[in-house]
Length: 272
Image (tube, rainbow, N blue to C red):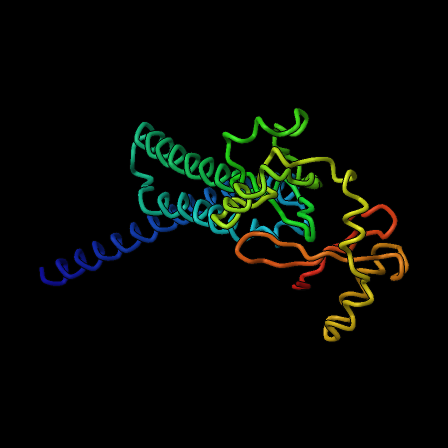
């Protein structure tokens, strides 16, 4: 009798252990499928973000890569982890559909919100600001001022930043605009000052410095500078540079053609 009881107990424990193993295998299988689907969606989102909104080098200059990885990384992990926690193969079909629907809505909402935040922070213009280039982001521009821009510039681009310059300030504007600039509203974010980039070509080239000077100033960066020069297809004598300002005190350097002021390359060097 005791042998029979011991045998039944052992069998019960073994069956329980097998059942638990099967449950966790099912959970990890559901987690893996969900994670794979989430990763595929994240890759599509990356094509949108880095292919259109943050083309190189703005994913570095404007912090787009870090922001995207933070938001999408949380979203990619969150959904599958919830699936791992709630999935149970013994649930009815109706319960499973309800679970996955709620998880899908939560994950989709988080992804949409994250992409909206990334889009709001995207770079929209690179503006010549009298002695430098400044990267302006959608969030930097007060919405109530946008209708003061030239008609063809009142819609912010969705396919990467465009190049603009600032017109000379009128005497009556200077005090208010400079005061606002000290308060954080940069001149480059004032739509009423925008004009085509080419309209300030002479001023841009006058402000630019010979790229050869960069090598003297930053000898440790010589190879990177020469690589950038080589990539432009221009001789170093035909190039000038300007400092570039972005958010969070990120400073880069733009390499420009000495003939038409076109930006040909960027370097992660603070040339101020």
